Length: 185
Image 1 (tube, rainbow, N blue to C red):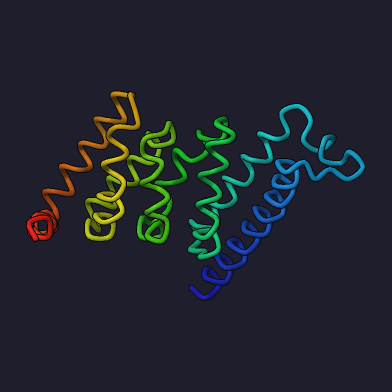
Image 2: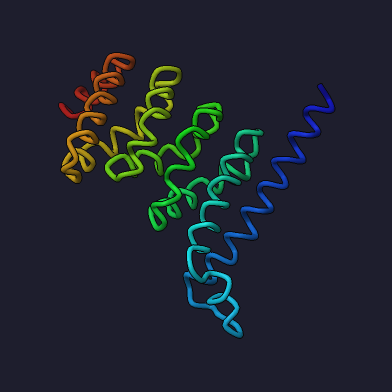
């Protein structure tokens, strides 16, 4: 088991280094920091989508191996997916390979994206967190819910939001009672 743990540590480190290197160049490209036309050449054609996809896959792979650095990069991953929608398919199966507790530090960012197209891909993850750790997400979801329910016209996203709200209400009934009591003060 020590060999497996060492292998996982090496893999998570390497995936993080790859994500960091690619993201550094992607940020330079996004900020038009082009020395000697290098960024234009590097990101020509479909390369920008390929590099963004490498970042997404690398961050998720590092998280799969328990990397806290990968968790810290997850907010950037969400931005990349929003900027480069072709990368969205890369997260579909990979999210299910990662323990849902790894996302606790990212819950505010995740709930903020539930009204966007990526919300459809995040729904299974949120559902898993609600089922296993409802207290961990109740606060961030309730903060976002009022804005989210009015910010999307997509019927599937609205339906998913309502299902999450109902499940949280069922799993954390005392939270609603507490909020109602505070509102009466």
